[in-house]
Amino acid sequence: LAKTTQPISMDSYEGQEVNITCSHNNIATNDYITWYQQFPSQGPRFIIQGYKTKVTNEVASLFIPADRKSSTLSLPRVSLSDTAVYYCLVVGTGGFKTIFGAGTRLFVKA
Amino acid sequence: DTAVSQTPKYLVTQMGNDKSIKCEQNLGHDTMYWYKQDSKKFLKIMFSYNNKELIINETVPNRFSPKSPDKAHLNLHINSLELGDSAVYFCASSQESGGGGSPLHFGNGTRLTVT
Image (cartoon, rainbow over the protein chains, first blue to last red):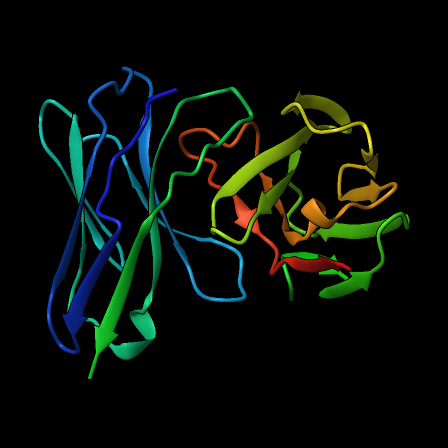
């Protein structure tokens, strides 16, 4: 299973764009890159998933370069309520075993 | 409508007791999971079930026994509770194997405190 590396923590201010980069050098051909968000006292929540290039939804954008060895989660104009832990995962088909790393703790300040 | 619901939300008990945590999902998913999040916030998979069949058991002590009466339910029974079992336990579900295209949906957790 591909291992991911992401910053332990990041600080930002309200209204700024936040980019969290994740490294996954050993990503396999059939792996997808998936991001989850976890607020205190809640379970992780799926944010976005992509295979290559760029994916955008109402919450975030995910940028994946051609070699797929890294990815960047982009949160536009963060607010205080975006303070959470963000997990980057690579997930293959099958396996029934989604593995979470340590995540990035994002703290948004006023 | 709550997609994945767990009960109870909080559970405080003494060492040596036996306790159960219940989980239900109304998403029609085939696969359900139990994860444990310890005080350092690491989220570790414990079990995964697909169509009521055990698929993954991540070297969890025998004191932990999951039971899936049907596809929508996965309960976790813990015997002879120990201090180290204190953690937040999350139930999750996914369509198929949780791979690409089938992300996990989590409940809000059960905080277990063993004294």
